[in-house]
Length: 358
Image (cartoon, rainbow, N blue to C red; front, top):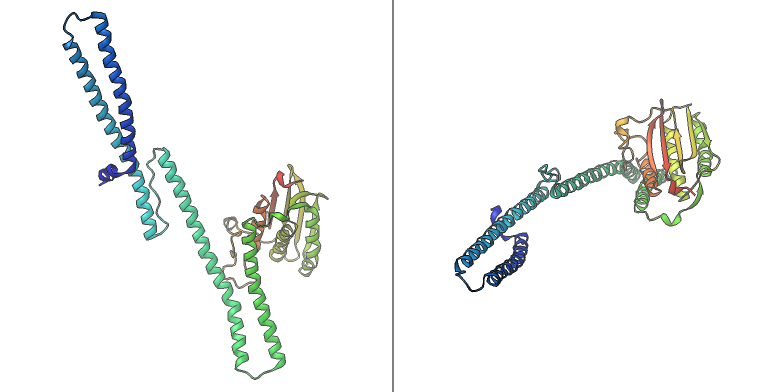
């Protein structure tokens, strides 16, 4: 089966064409050697003696060499093409299996570390990434369905109750207000998804300009100072007075605000939230630290996914998009976002590269 595919393959035809060209070149060289040798012997010996035996010997040697070369070239073409076709068939078979059964199959490696193994490794890595992305899409779909079901169910319940009860202006006004609030929450969720997608496609780099990151941090701290006082949390800022970077002011403000809001909400009541901003190694670093329960180390790689929440029941307020927005803004600015243990609590650090500084 494999031999038949080898003989029908375009690679084998190309190999035969190359062998034919090579054979013509070798034939020309051999003809040149043959006639040159005969001419040389004739010039040195002349017509004396019989050269037929010598000529026959040279012809036999030339024919034997030509046949040997043809056989070796044909064997080499078949073996090389067979190996190539075999590896291509492995890739085709795996591709067919993936189309039929799913993304759990991988192209086998032979351990030869040749170019075919490298191609197989790259394809396997691509399949790994596709499988991860498909898993994330499924998780996001499940989470969106769960987060939408609750407000939509509440709205339907209110409307059904209002439909079956006599009209009452005060009750109707309260129902309309609650329904609008739930609709605003749903619309806000979709607005956040759209905004994250827009950021990830780098559609907002036109708004980049010279900024003072310390000034943005100060404005966020001032904005959330009242919210921190409500839960007896001490919110403070420290670091350099001016930290120059290049970026989108609105996006950076939202990212820092999300981190401060999370620190206040999930920190220890009556605790401390500190925002520090400084220049470092030609770039910039802003860190938000709290003294709350923190995030388990095994969860830190997942919290930046869309709709991912540590509270799996998903009954507490929120939709799990805040840290996704932070990660998208960081990616747009070429910054690295990292989570560190604050012992107790959590420190979220945004590190902007040198190219972001002005």
